[in-house]
Structures are given as structure tokens and as C-alpha cells.
Length: 257
Image 1 (cartoon, rainbow, N blue to C red):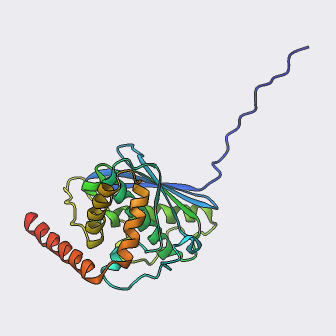
Image 2 (image 1 turned 60 degrees about the horizontal axis):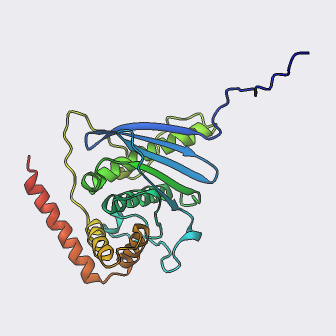
Image 3 (image 1 turned 60 degrees about the vertical axis):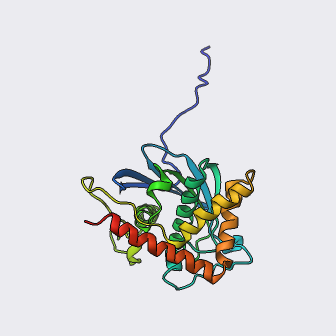
């Protein structure tokens, strides 16, 4: 009697979650963005040079917001550049360079803000994996953030269309101009943009807190910075706005056409 075949049956099956990917040039570097959507999570990866070195998660539900901060967003032009104040990014893997972690967490909360702008009722956990070359050097300007968020929204829109039965997959979606994906020709050299007031404040305060508390984890430092910015004295915020304006003017001088 022949021995029974104990080899497990293997068959090709579709991955149980919709996925979509796109790519574009950011700071003249090819950047791949991929999105996997689950019923309880949204997973986004942003990779340059095949890297994924920093992972964070951002709870989008208002139930997880800081009770001291209900997440009401000011309509001022300065705050319109910033992530929604109730969102907090927590590093779950990587993020060993403090300056790069600050940029990564800010990018993740910016993506979370864009998701909530598109769908205010979104409650899934956002998980973002990033592998960005010299993030602290190259991703401190609004333009770079806008381009990344635009690529992310592109794959999110495509993934949503893929998982639905809607036939009009090429319909246009109205969204703020700064959320539109921007593509750059490889032959054009991009210039990094000046930092806004919050980024300057965050980088300054991170160094100060880290020096005073060398054993404090970067996640805790970032949370402290977010809280302090929201309750900071008006004259301090105004001083950082002036620094940002000065940096903008100097940037224009340094990069005259």
C-alpha cells in the first residue's frame, strides 16, 4: 500500500487586503509609496533607496486624543501648515536619530491630518513605515511634505477604488491644492524649503530636553514638545514665526535664480 501524500496542498490566493503603490521624485530621489488597507489599520510605507528604517503609528480616533486638547484646529495661516493638534505619532521601530525621528513623526501626523480632512470619521490606526534619505536635511520644508502626502493620497484613493465596486475609477476628487501630488522631473534639481515656525521650535526644544534628560526616550520628548507648543506663550510663538520669516528671507537670498 502506497504511503499517503502528506504534502500540504498549496494554491495561489489573492492577498486579503487591497494594496496600491505609486512613485515620484522628491528632492530628485525616486520615492516609492505603498498602501495596504485593513478593516482596523491603514499601513503606508514611504521608501527611498529601498529603505524602511523608521516605523510609527498614529491613532486617528478622537477617543484616543489628549483630553487637554480636543483637536480643534485653528483657521490661522500658521496653524494650517501644521498637523492636527490631537494627533500623536509614536515610534514603534527604528527612529534612532533624534532629528530624523522628529521629521518622521511630523510627516506621519501630517498624513493622519490629510486622512481626517478627507474622512473626518476615520478611526482606523495609521501605521507608517519610512526610509527617507537624510530626513532632517531634506524633509524640513513644506513642499517636500506636500509632495509625500500627495503621493500617499494618490495610493489611498486608488486602494479605496480597488476595494469598492465603483466603476468611475477615474473621477476627480476635489481637495486642497496643497494635497495634490506633485511630480518633479529628474533633470531639475530641487532645493529644500525653509522650515516653518513649528519645525524650528520642535528642533530647538528637542535638543534642550534631550540634554536635560539624556535617558528620556524620543517618543516622550516629542509628546512633551507637542503639548508645550499648544500651550506656549504668544510672544514665544511670535518669536519663532519671526525666525521662520527670517529663514525664508535668507533662503530666498541664498537661492536666487
